[in-house]
Image (cartoon, rainbow, N blue to C red; front, side, top):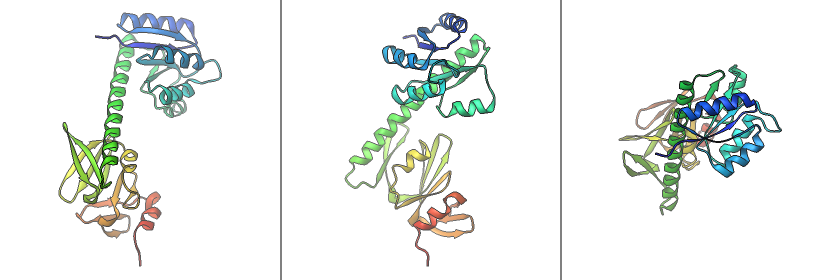
Length: 249
């Protein structure tokens, strides 16, 4: 089995050497060590490591957070932050780069292994989900009627006509698609599914709900009642857009 390759981006040399020794004992391959974001980008392009362990605070013009964003956009590689800071502001700022984990100094070898393996598993799932979404999107684009979605159910791809959809509900990394007769559960994000729906036929009424405009039966205060009797909350942020989509007299 191929060993996992790791790049260390850490401007404290002693910490970097200790981290490298620990990684070696755990069975990982350290492909390099650097102290700045600029150097990290060059080494990633050259070696394409499986994962990057990076200090949030780096020397040079690029912070660790800025470097992580560039790595995600350009190389699509998972980054785990190593930091001495765990305050809310630091974590919230770091989250803007969508890291795959955090290690707060000092940490133990078992914590290092667990964080790396969890990050790699998340990265694998995200990559697979992206491939599946691209496949479904391409299948949808190639359909001559332009009004279908192909959704994955177990090992099969099922054609679902958009006209049959009543509403869609988001639950973390999963999406429930409801028709008059069935419910389909798929791996996706709300934005991912919304981008595939025709904007004139579907509208977001809540951060967790999208409804088919022609399936709306009643609007009752802060709720939308649909043709299948489902009651969906109407969020204040989405109310104006929703009312613009329906014909009121």
